[in-house]
Length: 587
Ligand code: AMP
Image (cartoon, rainbow, N blue to C red):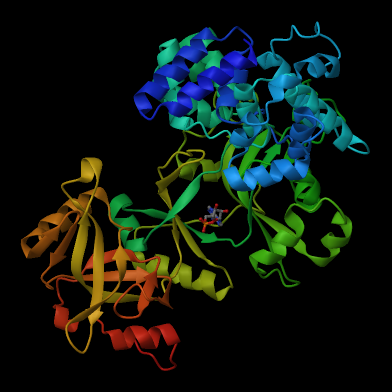
């Protein structure tokens, strides 16, 4: 496929506001792709040249891109001109499309070192992909020149429409409105496979191109066989804020762990070595047996030699572990997060910094244990994503006993609170709560992992208004307006929408609806009757609310049906809390 045809489709996608139509357009594009082009199309649509697990980047600074565009535009345009136009237009695609690069096609054929002058109908998708991979591979002295020459070669072969999408691709700003969900549904539609299977395959492979290919060539069977691969990091599972009582209510039992204040790391180990992604070959004994990746799946192995050595000494089977790297003081106590940052992405002086800041691994999950099942990497039984947390953690403790997090399994809030207090006393940030039966869902910020940061306080606020929800929530309140007692009546201090489950939202709507006194569009006003207990992280001065202060990160805790508005907290107390006045008690 010509890149021009891809650019046409991209323009159509961009002009299409409806999600369903977008899915159909992408599906049609997938079906029209030639055998080898499908993965390239899937990645380009997402603005990527490499799969998500591949740490390579194009490493093209904006100036280099402007310079290449300017050079392709002709002698009277400079990189500064391009930058200036960008400041006016706000978007590189518009600027690139306005440079009339197509006018230079005679020069293009010359620059590209081939093609019959004047007869070039632009690069193919594969040519663009190859050229960008070349750009990514250029390193060392003279690499900037190589990159510039390659980009110039591409830009001078393209029409205005192609230039728009090529420039965006080069700068990683594709923004076609094609998200992960669209690609998932389009793969499902194009190759008639179950969307859930596609979603699972995307999670374990972190590779849109590969999943599209497998769906096309091997169908649902192929998709369900896709598993984790050592050397291909997946997205980290993420956490939401939550409470101990909420967690116990929904799960009955929690797995509580220390929340380590460091940097997320995914550790991959393979005794046969892990080849670098760019090599495209089987590993050799010279390849490292351990590679480390950040939360965004970029490789950080070289910055963390002691973590690598630690794992090398202890692991012998293939493994993928999830954890946190923290900086520690001489007594092994945790140091603030900033200390880890001094080490984490460092490329130079690693050895010197290693002397200054000592790092330690706290592993808290095991995604793959090569000793399990049939013992092959990623084979039957080794991939633990679908196993419950408790089981994965047992694998972890077994594999790496001296770095595995300690877990308290408990159904008792008091016990968990005591555990939290111990963690805080030891200098940690707080605790994490995990559902013991939960699977590992890469990239998901779901309800199964909760971070419980200690609330400074909770406040009892009067609910004096709300906004109706949207879409399928149109019949329920979405956001509640909070107030505290003032000299006369009530003054607002913020709005709360988080910490409320779907079920709870329905109950709250039922509870509050009888108190509506007026309604204006989406907004309603309540008679002050109901008191919410609300947690928050801090209180800041704010002109937005009547009390002159706003709760930051307010979180619904409970309805205080034992309190009337007269018992609610007051503006005076809010002011005192904001000022951190000594002697503030827990009235
Ligand atoms: P936050 O960055 O505040 O959203 O908190 C979630 C992050 O806490 C995770 O992404 C991890 O990097 C980190 N973390 C620290 N300790 C743990 C733990 N025991 N389990 C999971 N995540 C943890």
